[in-house]
Length: 318
View 1 (tube, rainbow, N blue to C red):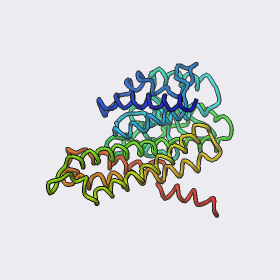
View 2: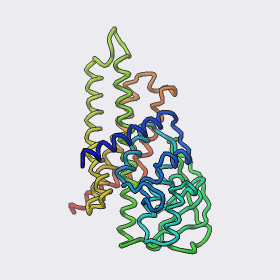
View 3: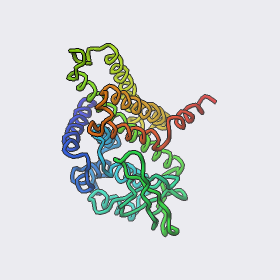
View 4: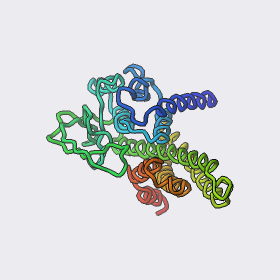
C-alpha cells in the first residue's frame, strides 16, 4: 500500500513538473482544470477527495519552478479553512464553487496583513469569533521582494453577516490552519532548494576554469555537498511534517515548526550558494537565480520566521 502511495505521488509530481515547466505563470483556470484546486475537496462537492499530502507534492513542485499562481492562498489555505468548518449549506456551496473554479477564495489569518492571493479574489474570509466570516473588504496590494508572490493587506469594510463555526475546538482549528500554511511554505522552499542544487551541479559540469570543469575543484565539491546535506535534512523534516498535518497528529505543530524553521532557512543558504557558485553569471538578471533567492527570502518570513518557530519549540523545555 505504501509503495502504491509513493508511486501515485511520483506520478503527480511528474505531471505537475511537466505543466509548470511550460510556463512559470499559471492562471487560476489552469489550476482548476489540472484538478489541483480541488485536490483536498471531498468528491461529493466535485473534488478529488485527496489529502494534504497530495497538495504538498504540488507545493514542492511549484517551489521547484518558482511558479507564480494562486495555489497557496486560494487552494491550500482556502480549502483547509473551509474543511475545518461545521457542515452547512454556505460551507458546502463554497467548497463546490471552489472545486469548479466558479469562485476564488482568499483567507486572512491574523493579522490581516500580507494575505496571500487576496488581490482579485471573489470572496475574502477572515478568522474571527471562533470561526470564519466572509466580509466586504478593501484589498490593498503589498509590494514585496519576491515578485512571484501576490500579497495584500485586507481591511474589513463592515461587520460580517454570518460566522461559520469551526468544527471542534476553535483554537485547535486555527492552530491547524497555521500549521498547514507553515508546512506548505516549507514544501515550497524544499522544492526551490532542490532546483538550485540541480542547476548548480549542471553548471559546474560544463563551466571550465584553468582547462577543466569547476566541478572538479574541491571547494566547489564541498559547497555542493553542504547544499545536499541541508536538502536531505530539510526533506526528512518536511516529510514528517506533511505526514503529521495530513493525519492531524497531536504533534503536528512541533513537526511543522521544525520543518518551517529549518527548510526555509536552509533554502536561503542554498540559493545564496548557488548564486556564488555560478560566478559572475549568477548575479546577472538572465540567470534567474535571483528569482529563487528572493522567493526563499520571503518564504523564510511567511507564517513565522525561523526564530519564532524555534522559540515555540523551546517552550517545550521550559
